[in-house]
Image (cartoon, rainbow, N blue to C red; front, side, top):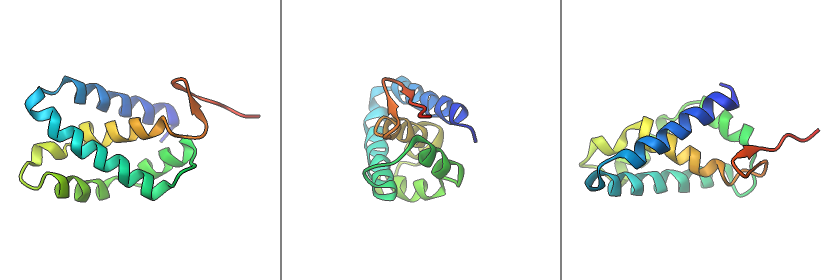
Length: 107
């Protein structure tokens, strides 16, 4: 998966999360934050945007387990196209080579 495709998907996840009704969004935000914490655990403090794209490309089935722990009775809160993609979008902002909404390419 290319960086551009991944970022597009992740941004769509953030948009979908913002568009959720308030009564659903609260729980989905908690799931998203738990996923961000798991991304931090998996990738550590310093990581590149390419590493994040690679992790995403390897699969996100592990995200379902995290989501189920946070919202075991609410499967609608596990929707990957919302919570997983939004979590990756948020964590991208912490990448060492990502600033101001774009990736820094170093020669």
